[in-house]
Image 1 (cartoon, one colour):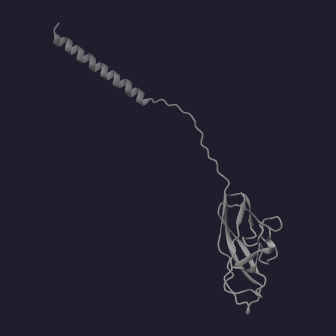
Image 2: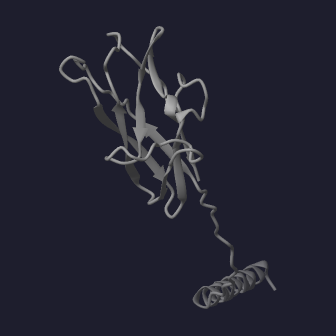
Image 3: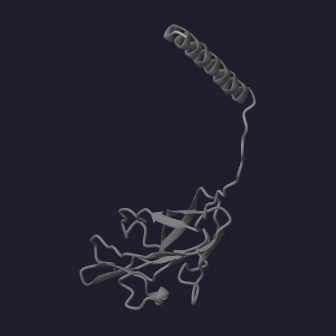
Length: 175
């Protein structure tokens, strides 16, 4: 037998093997197999709140024209996560001399004092403080910003020395 014969048989055998291999691969591709599993997805949403405020200004007052009381208001903006209960307390101010001296809130201009008070209600009957000897605002978060009104009053301007008066009040939100 000649080498040509062996070469022809070998080529034919290789061709058959290639065709059979391709057929096996196409059979596998036509009937794919699969497997499945699971995994967990999770998140922890934290309870959170924040509060911002703007200056409560009574403006320029002529005590001869308006001896008092003089009223003004401002807003606090509270944002808490949805369904989160919270309360907002106000300090007595840095000039009161005592953190709980809500009856002694004063603005200062050097050594001169101008008494004032902050209230929860427009009728100015409920002092806004820390909840011990005064009220606090209580609410529930919506997930959106909520505006709270702070009502201020200068009870009397009689005998007050002219000038610019100020105080700093700390806002505390508990949730």
